[in-house]
Amino acid sequence: MLGDFLVYPPRPPGLKGSRFCPQCLASDPYWRIAWRDPLTVACPIHRILLAGTCHACGQEPFATSAWAMNERPVTECPENRPDPQRRARTKLTKCGADLRNACCPEADPMTVAACALLFKGTSDPRGPRRAAGLPASNQEAAESLIFLVHGLSGDHSTKPTRDNIRSALSIAYQVLDKPTLCEAAAHAMKYRILRGHLGHVGMITPAPKGIPFPAAHPIIQALFLESIRDQLPLTMHLTYQLESTWPRAPQGVRVPQRETPVHFPRWSTPALALHRVPQLWWADGLEVANRDLTDFERFAMSLAICNVGRSMTLASIAEDLGATKASARFATRTWRRLAEPSGWRSLQAKFVELAEALQDEPPPINYQRRRELLPSPEAVRMLLPQLGVTEGLDDDELLWMWSFSTQSSCNLIPPQQRENLARRVTPRTPAPALLNRLSCALETYFDEPLYWTPP
Figure 1 (cartoon, rainbow, N blue to C red):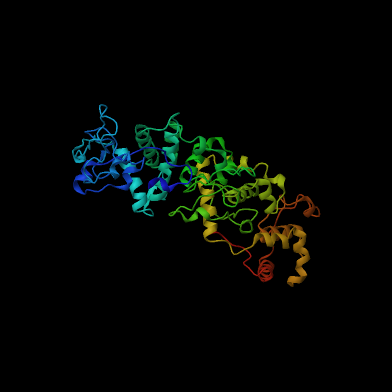
Figure 2: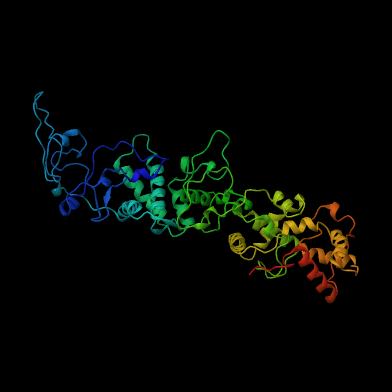
């Protein structure tokens, strides 16, 4: 049954009897099990609404046990004719009307398409399709359709009728048929679908201990995140990857995830490891502005890349990047300034793209280990004898070599690590011969390239 797709929420309960398609009974006379499902209201083959009652006796086929007491062809009504004048303990009259002669109205295209999707969900569950602009399978789209129908038909104070379910099917399919997630979320909000169990805070935040929330379906989760986009801070936009192919809650937190979408392999990919990101983003990497970026802007870019898909505060990320917590105070302000030419959505999409590119081809450098080996420019001076470099370095050359090796800024590290360095020292590149000797020695010491540029 189609309702067996879901553990939560259950399918609409308690519709007795079975509907039927007269034209299907005429061409291939047998009763389909899908006709008993409350969500199957139309025949996707003949594009008509299923008949709910016999045209002769007005009763629903198989609503009672009369079918078990009489052996008759499958094309005849299995019920007994109602007879108010019948005396007690007398036999009821069989109906036996030919159900192939029942007349059914034509179904609207959206209802037919919804029923066809439910059929494909069982016949070809892993077949690819688009659902609300997302790359999903037929089964995932059918599951999300049932979720939406349950949310729409559940608005009624009484048990939902077949008319309620038919209208809910049409509206739910319109949501999934939208070409983009933004349009789908706007259409769902128009009918107030994304609320109640389809839109609770537990979808995107850890549940309190002892009060676990049910897992959110991936498509419903993406719709809900898109609908509350304007209510979330910029950091949450990156945490939930709202500009990625599939917005989702970050992995590794106490948010239950039902399954991995079949046609979206990145769903279970963890956030980019922090040791793969330098404190200062690559100066010759992908530009986000038509000018050279300052050290603080490059640091804000590194914070943004680390924030993609990660449930951490910017202060904690800054600390893991070797900077002070206070240095992350103006990160979001810097993002807004960088987003002025193209807009925040475009910049956010670029952050997600850069993070995914580093996931696919990670740097061959462990920047966290390098920052631990060289926590300050003074550590480079102490390392020179071990590297076999007898020439001394001035403070400005020392600062340049440390910044280049660790890809860090002296203005971001803790004060105790830069207390012996003059505040007005400007980095200066060492002489070419000395620079080549130092580079080769440091590469041998680190056992990895001294510098790397994203492809």
